Amino acid sequence: RQLKYRFRFTDSNPEASHEDPDEHAFAYFSMGGGPDGLSVFPTATGYELTWFGCYEPHDEEEDNDNVIMSVAPGTWYDVTVTFDWTIDDSDENWAFVTCEGDDGTIERKKRVLSSRQPLTAMRLYNYSPSVAHYSNVDVKYSPHTSRDG
Image (cartoon, rainbow, N blue to C red):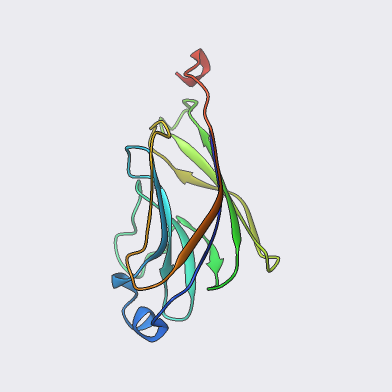
């Protein structure tokens, strides 16, 4: 159960994005019927590829455990999300996200909480004036097994 895709984004108005980051997002990629997905969110000084859905920080001072890595406009990134549907002692479902940029930046196997939804649909869009490019979308799915719980 794995999803791979490639993306890059632009920000048509970086001043506005960095001034009010909560109102902007780019390269939104949502999958399945659940809340899981990835998006680029601006910060005061840059941009972060972030997993969203199962966990949100309670306030602005709290670190967001779902930040995958810092990203930059105009750079292509390869993203791999591997879903682990096995049941562990925590009773949580996990996904592992790897992101590698053409500029040499990489984050390997960042663990994030995930819902247990089949990859039945994808949604691609932006929350802000910008352009996002996607390519090489690859979805691998396997049937439910006894190991899945």
